[in-house]
Image 1 (cartoon, rainbow over the protein chains, first blue to last red):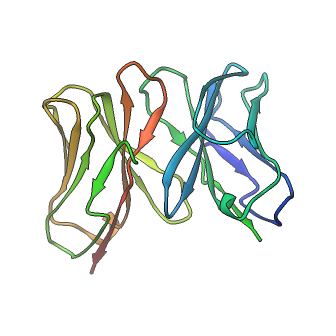
Image 2 (cartoon, chains in turn orange, yellow):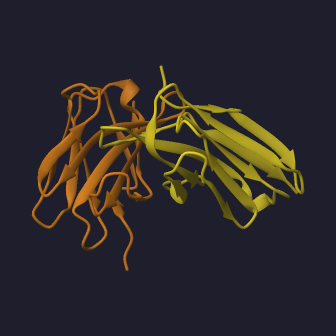
Amino acid sequence: KAGVTQTPRYLIKTRGQQVTLSCSPISGHRSVSWYQQTPGQGLQFLFEYFSETQRNKGNFPGRFSGRQFSNSRSEMNVSTLELGDSALYLCASSLGTKGEKLLFGSGTQLSVL
Amino acid sequence: TQLLEQSPQFLSIQEGENLTVYCNSSSVFSSLQWYRQEPGEGPVLLVTVVTGGEVKKLKRLTFQFGDARKDSSLHITAAQPGDTGLYLCAGVQTGANNLFFGTGTRLTVIP
């Protein structure tokens, strides 16, 4: 069974640009959650999508957005990038039941210069 | 303010030693999970505890969920270099849906 796939693996952008990250969940999983990981703040929840609908949202500005397609693949977008957006962005897939385990991808390392 | 505080933040020990990592909160959780993350990878689930006072063992790792479901601990016996990594606790608050992660404990086991 293929794992959770995130692309690209690494990304370098400059301030003011926008970026789109992609996540393909495990086959059969309908929930995709996105997290931002930084050395200072740890893992922070961005949002969760389930069956193409945003089900939960963390405390991030509107520059951070996402969507989910009918095949459960998900994208997240960050507009008007800031230096502080440099982080490892992780996506996790699950069947969607509350409290169940999350299966994480290897992440996209975003550097904003 | 982090919902889940882990201690210690960093831990460096010799192979064969024992260690305990703590995960504390003032909130009650319906369940709590422990993950390990290695450099360049996403976190991998080790265990889920759901009942207050529950103890689970996974080979040399022992996980305990506090009676009040506000805290948890991870004890590793006879640590090995392969145990090196970032250990994260994560909990689902009662009444909520998403998982909150702890601040993390970075463990280094020296051969």
